[in-house]
Length: 143
Image (cartoon, rainbow, N blue to C red; front, side, top):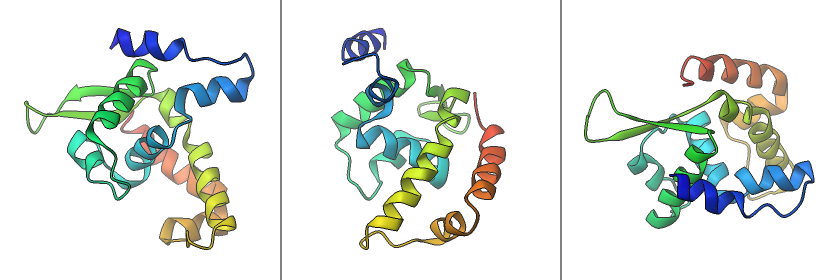
């Protein structure tokens, strides 16, 4: 895991806060993993692998390692199956919730191919309430 962090940390392009943030979570796969944990209750490698975007297994392993090295996720042995690992958000990961919600809202607003589903309709109606509700729910799960 230290190797993933060392490799990843060398990729910083500038000291711009946006650039630094994107260096940590800016690729689509990392954000989709975070989305799956936050909004779809996915917690395991096999659940992430089954997402509709069809992430390749080698990319999934890499992104999970990076997110863990960056302390956005924590990996633990599953209490239900000792041969399986589960991932959960840290407080640092939970702090990405408003960003994920904003990206969802923006995507639904400007892309006709991305219709608002149930949560998207709630976001359109009262974004702050959705963030507050999800934050409260996810806080009980953070490590």
